Length: 372
Figure 1 (cartoon, helix red, strand yellow):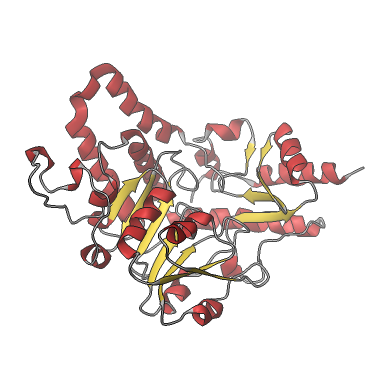
Figure 2: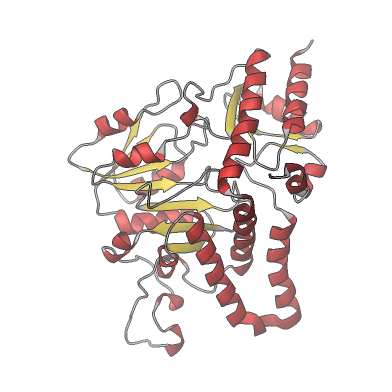
């Protein structure tokens, strides 16, 4: 049995506010903060004397992240954000063909391809959900890539990646996991994902300046990185200026120079915490709180814009229709309740460190705002 109250105590933000905003940026646990600041303490006290130790620690984090998504360590690179990872993916796939995405997408999943001159075709949602048959219907002989977020930032719609992988055919499946990694199980092998990127500052709970990208070995072998750095070669300390022998792993494509150790170590600490809890338990907890939220919202007459008709579409994000979102977010913040403003209303995120009291505070505050 998991003692969620004890886990909640590891997140100091819960002592001050009802933080229902992980979909924008997640808070840090004490252990995650300690992992990042430990590096700065060493750098302050000893300067560069721990370089080899830090490199070894980086490789441990890589292994932990790889295990977290069921990849091999050489298929994972540690990045600073989703955009960095997506551009590494496009480097490997820019000659594959046209891209299919959807109208709900966060732009990093679409405009990055368009910037390279690659056509992107957007499938329209139906009642807030994107049907796999509509994605199949959009495929043509020119299609080479499917680029989608696992969970949509706009309304919380969640793709069934297992079903999606069965319909991808020979197209490359690229997943933006920034709204799902850390709250939903991801198995890149079972789900037949060719490439995936995620930031650490949302559901991975490791702060800005952290993230990761996955490229399967087949994709790495059939492509060449567009950008390299001095650490991208097999023997960087040889300092050769006359020849290039690139490392074959994913890290060589994105970890171009001296690493951002603090972000990497924070990510590693967060992954360790999630592994201790178990990603299946985290998913169950977040969805349980989401159901509690949506059921009470609907009972109280609020309109939920997130697709809830089929349970597999549910995520831990809920879009609630409100007439004056800016006022609502500001008023809720004044009451110590943190959510995100959206054009249609507010977005509420329930993570494993939240509890029913957080949700009740939100419901009560919304009711007060509705009253004359």
